Image 1 (cartoon, rainbow over the protein chains, first blue to last red):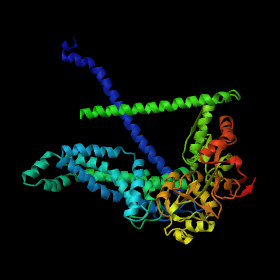
Image 2 (cartoon, one colour):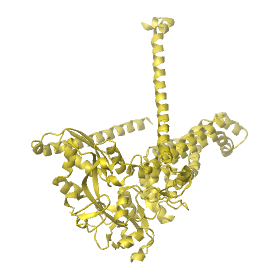
Image 3 (cartoon, rainbow over the protein chains, first blue to last red):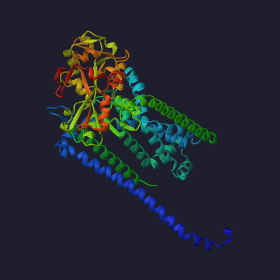
Image 4 (cartoon, one colour):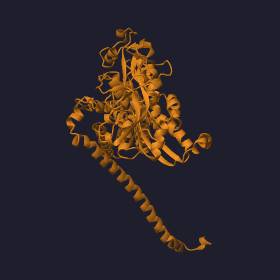
Length: 306
Length: 308
């Protein structure tokens, strides 16, 4: 019966309820957005006030905190609060793992999109997704059981080293880089490829000279997102890096990162103590670093658009 | 592709069912246990009810959780939650009143920023610990002097102590760890250990020591269950429960349960329950602790030891 009504009547009738739906939808998404934004702001404010306590209340010099290599917060006579070794460790494992994972991830992405889009993608995609799903504690445990003894026996050192941390992190950030790089390359307009072929370029020339430069900002974004993940990873790194507070002198030396020191000590310290406050300050450094990573990504993605 | 989807759905369902069955089985077992134990005792005393939140030392968590389970089985209306967050967290939370009992490996006086005079200490167990070495080092006994030299990095090879020709690898605990504090104070005489691999969890420490040639760390007695790591005797005194109880072996610590002010009601009932012979003589042993009731010496927050 309804179908026989003229279109105008039907539309007029449902107009009111449609507007209602329109409003409801709008309110729901606005609420979602507000919750997300306020959560982020709240975390930033909280971490900011907590993280600055050690400088304001406990009077630790911010310069000493960032540049001294001596970390000995429990020494009753002259405690030392220098986190440079941990900042160095964090950056070292992050950069090294990006160096390993970036070529692998981008190579995999090119393989999936350009070389073997049909069967390559069918195999590699689930493999990559599987890597995302493995919990970090499992990576750490495999690293501790397999990788550490392997490095100790075949490469040298104790096995607990920057190298172990780098390898574990490389595998962990590989899916991030691969997925984003795949999306970036496959979203390039097809006329780029066709134009290049029409000029007589081979497939490899097309990939190297046309596709990679065109997708470069997104590829860099992929790498930086991977680095942000590596920078914040705690558990898996903690199990293989050795957590030594000296500056490492070689890639086979044990080291420590900001995150591993926080997770090792947080539970043992009491709220409001100097030790606890310095851990919050390290958390603040992590937050600032992740802001820096995001700024870098925004800069890169605004730089070149096709 | 479609068949794969169906299969994965099936697999998910199957996994869910197994999980549900496992949970259900566990729950019903607890129930039967509960009614078995509860009947004779609930008649004697008035029934307790309410809920109790306990937090703190992750080393103590299994012990207190096991005791809480038995306690809840005897008092079905009681709900006890035992969280592990570390001694610092436990002390902080009990001091600010967000939990009723805070467990700690160390005296509250030793932690900064805790109003120790507001907290009441209940020593519920004793834990003995000693240096643990990789068996291949060939060392079983060490003088305290040499132990200090090993941990401060003055001796770097086991052959200097008559062991195998292996480089010494230190396995430490984090700065703020209670285990580290106890070991430094009573085994190393307050010396600060040299830098080495640092791990928090005793299981990880044990794993590293057992797999690394020349490794040395420290573990609670309960972790020397097999021969993958060798417990060291210190100055010829074997690391045994008896030697700790008589005060001959110096490296031990209390496990504390702190309350804010004198405990009452449920918290008091549970703390009393922890001190019953049943818990002290059976459960503690199963969990690798020594009963505090059998100690022939006692210690204060400064570490002074005296006979009881």
